Length: 111
Image 1 (cartoon, rainbow, N blue to C red):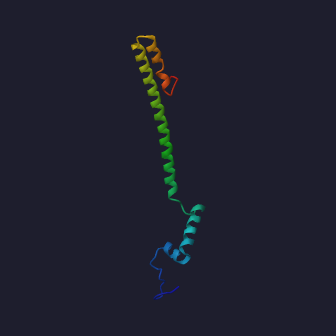
Image 2 (spheres, rainbow, N blue to C red):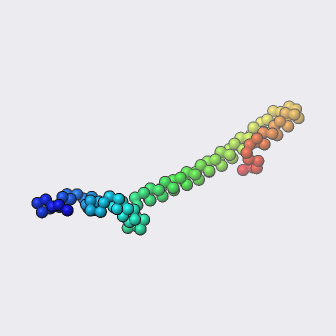
Image 3 (cartoon, one colour):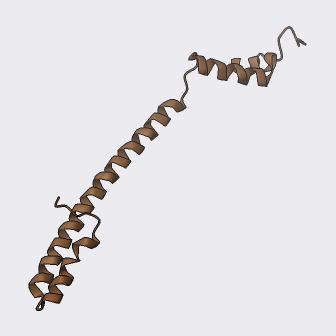
């Protein structure tokens, strides 16, 4: 390595830049990933990935709860419409048509 005025030309660079100059960039990248996989260098993305996964599972559970609540409300609405239909029906045919209202909903049991 050439020295100018008794100093190395890499004196003003940070440590990682001096290592890259001595070892070469591909070897430095490989050493970085090896150190990260061995646990010597902490990964700053692992915490972010865990938070994203936690948020996704929370969102999925909230969506499932919301869907179940909507199904319950739609079933209750179907019962109310069926009762109104039966009360307003004048003939047996109209009452038979009212009986098919709840069979169109996805839920067939009382909540």
